[in-house]
Image 1: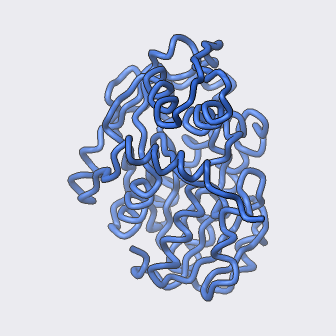
Image 2: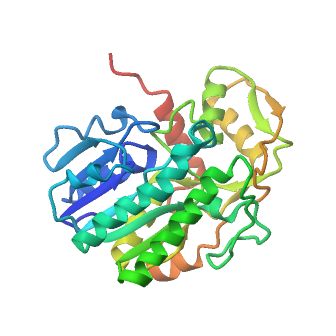
Length: 319
């Protein structure tokens, strides 16, 4: 997928998911303008794209209107992924996270509106907070602590969704909202702070694998290729969303840690640590909307996806 658009802007395009989207769009024949300030993204993620015909990297902060104004137009797709997404990053960059969801989303929306482009916001399952509804449907409003430490990310995305919806109602903008659940795969940072890269890094190093709380909290993982499929299917659909994109196999975090220890052949043991404030107890998306309207469902099993991810973390590094 990618041939539906001639020219696209991907904010946060040097990040984990963003770089995979840039790659997919470019492979489909779309000219890609990747905008990233590299606060959490990496040149390494897009190194294989740099120099390719049709790919341009703009190192800039999306909160600066000049960042998007520098891209010659018109474009016909704007994908807004610019925001710290892991707890370690958004707790380190709380103000920047809030600004990305507010000022950054506004700047990206303005560019899409000016060019009459399709706009897609990468939102998150975090808008549901520590959910009281299970599984979570798109019509669920969530259970978010607005002043807790995680709120800088949760509320950033909730505000961004409200802003996107207001642009659609007020200006008849062509917008969409995707709510991404726990995604993993190649190009995650080893020090990302999220469960999968942390467990893999610790297991490969023979360290104790740190599981928060008693490990009974659940997550549904989605391999990055499947997440990109869902994002681009929504972008191509014309549907406004929001749409949940996530896996359906719910697994306790402790079992995930033990599975990764087994896949890596590690002798590591589990060590339990304090559970973060407002850490969700259960999380599983209702993906009925994605299945019905986008004909989307995950194709890569957790076992296969984790194997690919472990292989990526153990790959020989270029000299």
